[in-house]
Image (spheres, one colour):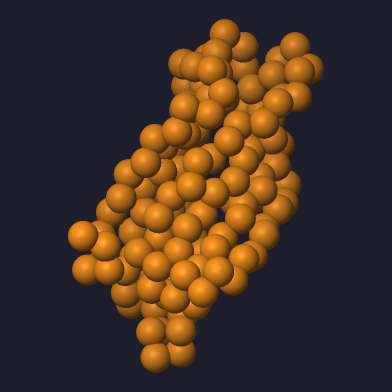
Length: 131
């Protein structure tokens, strides 16, 4: 199952998300549901930006919340030129068949202005959980 969500976060940044349930890596009998998410960050602005860090809020359907913050994404702090995009894939494991993720990226533009780009909530759901 793949879900795509597109968020216009800051006028300069567009974030597209694709989600896939990883059945082979999940263990429902142990309450472990694995998901991959592929994110494309597109620079719609006029200056180069650098993605410095990320902050995620992951919530399962039991309302258990986990926050994840860190430098860059997948070990990188990419520069994204005007009109260009950066894509990466990562993953999350939750305790229930349905959950959500949301968060933000912290960026800086080539003029030295720091800003956040919101990542709107997106659904993590195993197949046939949501119609």
